[in-house]
Image: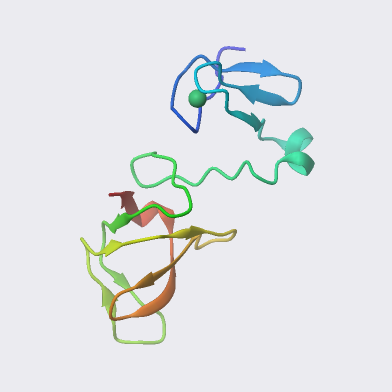
Length: 115
Ligand SMILES: [Zn+2]
């Protein structure tokens, strides 16, 4: 009972448990508890965080915090590159986005921060 997560919507720490769900009384957000038991009903419980632990959501603007080589090309996404309108996806590279001058690509959330 001592380690309830902060609300992913507003980051309040007044979370309480309601069955298989967590509920935030501050903003009314409800989300499924992570873990094997709740996995089947947890389709919208993705919790993709940037390098600083901020939760990312579809449509966010992020900044790349590390030079990233693009596989199969000589191009590099430079540190400090701003990327608008990201889309979160499942997988090892969990951010789908389009970068000016480069095109569509996927990034790892651990190498970005929310702008
Ligand atoms: Zn909340």
